[in-house]
Length: 119
Image (tube, rainbow, N blue to C red):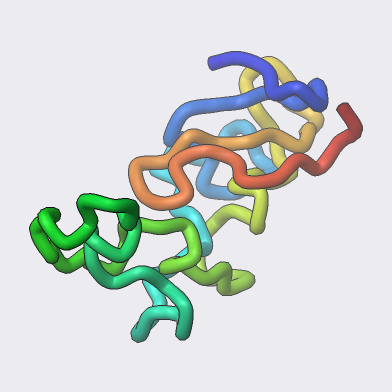
């Protein structure tokens, strides 16, 4: 798919089922984040709370469901296939001996939230 600013490659969705075996079957890689069971203490819970300003009272007081903010999720090591940066070390078609790479996923965080290398 491309390259991150730290020089590591970025792939979309798929990786080898055995990260170090380029002969293993492909699978959809799963991030290791999950939605928290309850919101953080200072999380805004309505649209009005975010908009504020002089017309805040005229805004619809629409609830904001969990999952709208990054802080609504937590990283659980080992929950999925990927680390906290939405990447892993393993073989890829271009690097059969293995390399660290990021993965664009179908679920949060969708793309890396941090970098493993240096920029």
